Amino acid sequence: QVQLVESGGGLVQPGGSLRLSCAGSGLTFSSYIMSWYRQAPGKEREMVATITRSGGSRTYVDSVKGRFTISRDNAKKTVHLQMNSLKPEDTAVYYCNSRNGVRDFWGQGTQVTVSS
Image 1: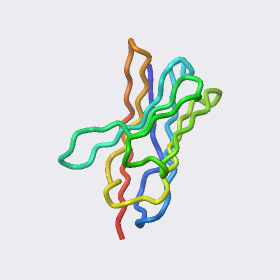
Image 2: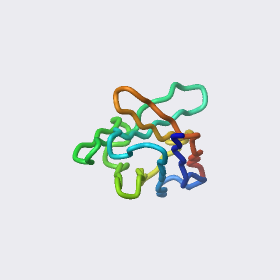
Image 3: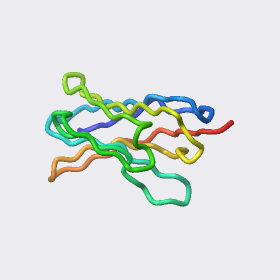
């Protein structure tokens, strides 16, 4: 059974930082492209950051470029999202996603709230 478990969310003040983690199990982790998505209340889910299987290439939505960094450790089956200079508009539930063109899995999400 494939599981993706996110952690690291919470409440942070504007300008602060958080590091999200996603631990995978039940899958050949290195065979999957990993992404972080987010969904704010009343909005559609959007892709925040994606990292290729080897970690050699990363893409980001324009609104987080220069502030967020995605990384992965295939040996530990984890993917991380380092979020710096957080803004209130970053408030959302953040989801971990894995896909390999055939199969697509999601975590349960972790809440990130940016507020003073």
